[in-house]
Amino acid sequence: MSGKYKLFMFLASKKNNYFYMQILKMNSMKNNFLKPVLFLLIFIVFIFSCSTEDNENVQNADEEVSIEQITVEEIYKELSKAEFPQNWNEDFLDSGTSFKGITLSPEEVNSLNYMDNDFEGSDATFLWKYETSDWKLVCVKYFFFDANYYWLMTLNEDFGMIDELKFAADEAVRVENEFGGTSTGIEYYTAVLELKDGTVFIDSEEGNYFINNEGVFSKTVNYIDPKPIDEFSNLFKAGADFPLDIDSVFIAEVSASLYKPLKAEHLKTLFTNGKDLENFYGSWSVKACIIIDSLKQANLYEEFLQGDNSGEIEYSDAFALNILKFDGRITAYIWAISEATAESGPYSSGTNIYISFADNNKIISSYMIAELSSGGDSPMWSETIITATIYENAEIDILKTGILGDDDAETEEKTTDSYNYVLENGKLIDMNEN
Image 1 (tube, rainbow, N blue to C red):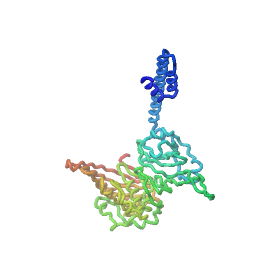
Image 2: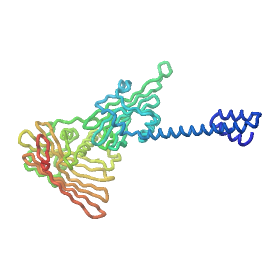
Image 3: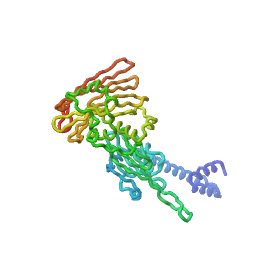
């Protein structure tokens, strides 16, 4: 057999056994005149088949491009909003859950490249969504090797993933029977999802978690119930005179030596209907103090301090300050939170002053009205001084001063704003807008 016949026999055998057999037949022909003609025909068919396969590959590539265009944002818009509580017990898991959701093929799952790589090649069904002003939440079911795994994923405003947590599952397992053989059984990992304090709590066999303001699944302790205000109002100092001036000296003197401490169960009551006034940011400090006190009550605070808390609040204590009595049934409780972040990374510390209005021993609104704080991330630094004066007619004058500096430039920028609020129907109303 000549060299060129051997070459094309090799090519043909790699492409298809059919071509290989035709060349063998051609080589055995006695009519040498027909051999070149048949060889040419076989070669043309071979080239045509290669071209057809290339076109199919291009078509498949086009399909892959279209798969990459699927986004979580598109899926999220079509999902139904979750209702709580949800009890993911064995019966619920056996039923396949009652959520319809949106199912993706393995190729579509892989195109969402931030999904868990352990589930590459599996189907996924997006079940439901839930969101707050800080993060979005989706529940996803993966079907993988005779098992269903249920995950929660938090997303930012651009639909990028913040964090993920496996919270439930049902999977087939081999178990020994009474006759010494094995049979197939189901192993369950159950959970309960609840909505508390404006966030989602997860009580599962994997652990107890809640979603913090950053959208991260954080380990938590047992839920702490709020305590009625009349059960701890004696912690506050009564008899403050009007007008009450909450200046920088007043704020700086807040300490455990002068005032009695407040616990997580007290703060949950005091910050009922809590709201940030425009350009004031005190809500997160309350939430952080509740978390830290909860850890202290569960003897987990020291373990928390050993973690990587760079830039996060590590130290937070709350104090009961004064009680103010207005005309009618309205009472105001003045309280404070002193806090500091971890020393690593951007650092800040300070004290916030809050006012909670109560009608007949029921908190109707709460606000941060004063602050003394400082912080920095070299070479930048800042100071915030917010003072307030509370009058007998339930008017509050507030003065906010902000200072921003740069160590390198040895310059600073100072801004001052004033506000005037009055209590109407249980809420502070900005008089400057009227």
